[in-house]
Image (cartoon, rainbow, N blue to C red; front, side, top):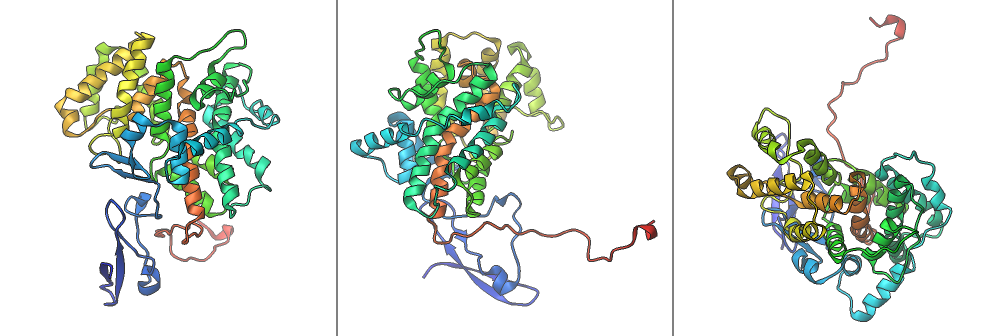
Length: 430
């Protein structure tokens, strides 16, 4: 028999026995589905920070211990031994592929790298200086129109085909955001290239010259894509699931996730890191900003340090830190921004104030530096994030579609507005 928690309504004396459910890891949860039916009450949990919205077998993270696992595999092992497309397969299918399965998967993804030619015209409807995330959200939503009648979300084969389409097309869509803003012609995918190389080819190549990315750049981006592939029930993933619960087109669900990821408190954090480094400007001014960060009365915050979930260290930051340093060394960049970043990193790892509060550099800190070193505009940073996260979003959407408890999301509220009152004619109002 499972454990239970007894909830007592002190107003009436009525009691409710709620099952306590234990997952593979993490804190147990209290099943309160019968709370309203039996006691006539709901729970209040702003931000849903203590509410489990679903059962999931995809990603587990422990913020206190700095643990992140996909389908049971530690992120450290995946980052060291795997590649992004293999991680995508793992998220979607639940297991690592055999060599035959991996070859079939890679070929299937390559079959879906192209987009409809008419879609390229969609970009020209935006201003030349439009934020790439607004373009990305709009374009991904537009893709839904090409597959609306051909996608049966209740058909497992259709769902898998959609996952392949999303993963295959996202680099193409993202690269066009960059090239449209840069005034460059769009580049078709080249399926002889690997996933990351193909993205870099579509993004950075020029018609007038050969393009061959640095191995360190390919490795750094591959790692970032792996580290950003999924991250449990965060704001954007929860948005994808909520949109999916309404049985919306899966591309529209992904577009909803992109809109949420755009937020400065979510995917926009790496862009905010660069803005902060630009504001500091010079390594000689760092101490002034450190003092401001320590001042409780100053609203200034150091972006890219600490994490809402990881209270010890961000395991993704530990992984990407070395790749970031290797890339900066190979590119031999000496810009003041990177000097500021490296000095900030040193202080955060040595200063008692940061150590005691566990304000270590997080993945956004290093990803922002990598993108900047590759000369990717800061406005594109979150587009890169969305490209990588689309695999996790699709895995979460597919899991939702297969959930036996599937139902449309409908959060409750605690109403605190005026009590019932009667309408007064405008001529009689004071």
